[in-house]
Length: 381
Image 1 (cartoon, helix red, strand yellow):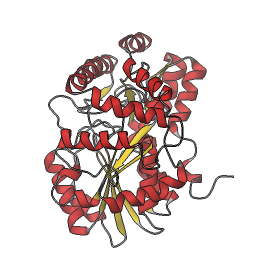
Image 2 (cartoon, rainbow, N blue to C red):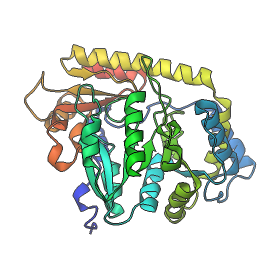
Image 3 (cartoon, rainbow, N blue to C red):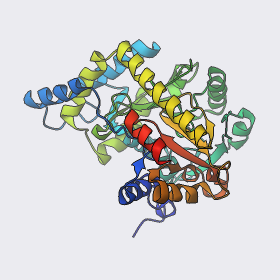
């Protein structure tokens, strides 16, 4: 019997669409995992770590080698300084990092601000903590931020704003002006920020990822969450982290120690080496490869008659079904699986129950796939 806090959320749409894709032999462009492996060297790093005895529990907040690599990454990429032993917490992927942070920071009755569409775990995590949610709908096709409307949502119980940048599912990369507006609002109202930045390296067309923690007044009130899964195409290894000021990271750790306690030790050791080994040349090639896939998928969806929003970040494309059908996107997605054997994700699940109208015209297609997979999807469509 499911708890009343989680009962409204049912089964994750990701699980549902993947199951249906398997049942119908469909090409799965619904769920955001690559159908290829990351660099083979990282596999060697993991095997070497196991041979060298990295096989028991790691330090709960993270293997020293990994937290030191994460701190150096922030210094190199963003010019930010963090104490690796006190201001970094390694978690079982970014999802656990988000969960541990929400559970560690919030009390029953607190309010959380979200921007819709949102990654579907955010409202469920708030519910687990006994918090309530207020949300601002970012409207397609440009998903521009209306700061006045966001400001109007802030109330006396508002404690936390969850930001996703680059944004899933829209592919929006928040501009410096938008981030500065969010930062000023948070400083003025003494709000904490939980910033989900797992797609930090996947930006295109000159868009630049700016961690909100790097803006004035934000380091002391922001927890930044990221992971190695998207960067190294090894989502199943589940190596993530939370970085921020010591007192906020301590809140994350307070929950993390009772959720998973520690993350897989040899994979932590391998990812510590990967962060140091794969530099700007690797990241540039990663972006270039994904840009080719993005352009292919955008052109293919337009060719098939969808309305398309071109993403500046992440590895997803949102497609408007209205030029093709009067059916809700959720129903149309089921038709695609049954009739064309191609799976896409209905975006309605990324909205609150009362605000699904916007999402019921949108499907999310993932382009983190081999080119031959995308070419096969084009033929089926």
